[in-house]
Image 1 (cartoon, rainbow, N blue to C red):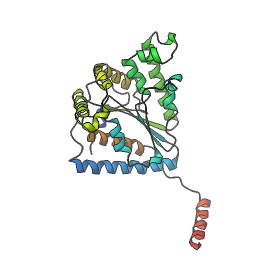
Image 2: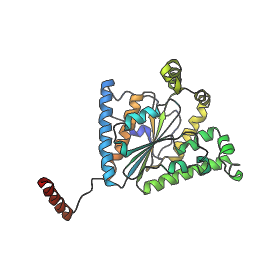
Image 3: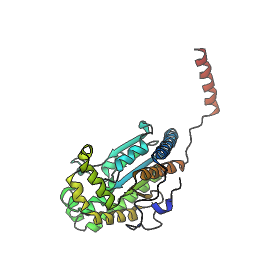
Image 4: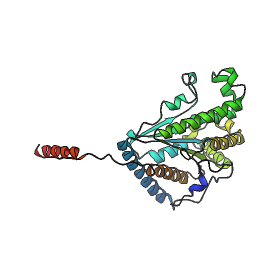
Length: 292
């Protein structure tokens, strides 16, 4: 499976320009059966590497998913991590901040659920909402976030400060063994319309559609600018962004799973080794068990 990482991976060496990355590429699979075979193989390999990571107990992996509505965050997370030992994966979805969360700084609610050593953390939305939704709707900051007024008079400076805080957090996490991958699921406007219509036309999907989805679609260009700034302000070698073509869900899931496996394979980890004295004890324990 040949994936052009240079075309979708951003680590700060080049700028991301909205519209410069495709929302659809040629299929990485022959048919549905081939896709299922490939995704199962990737899940199995991810599970094996996560078990080594857990035993090694030095690294953790944080995967962050950001996208517009209907891009397929939930389905991708299920497809990629469904076969991994549930004790080794922690999935957290972030919705509108609760009253308790608003009593803290914007990084608090994500910081308390960062993955433990040996685990994979999955963020469905994240602290990046604070430089996406809040940039498109700055009244969410000025009206609800209880930030002192002198800090909200210059919103450009406030968001620049948030970008700096995010970069510092991810640098700190990297220094402590947490590898961070960020995925922007790059959906086209036409495909989003198609999926919204499906949610309206198919009764079993009606629950997925909200009037808010249609309202937010009206801010399409604003969100695209916000995504562009988000990626360019925070893309680094230790925490790259992947702009994943999202119009084909199967392709999207294969790309994400491949990126996760690639990151796990690049970690310098192994099962712990034991000393000669410990091996001698284990042989003695084995003899005792055989006599039992």
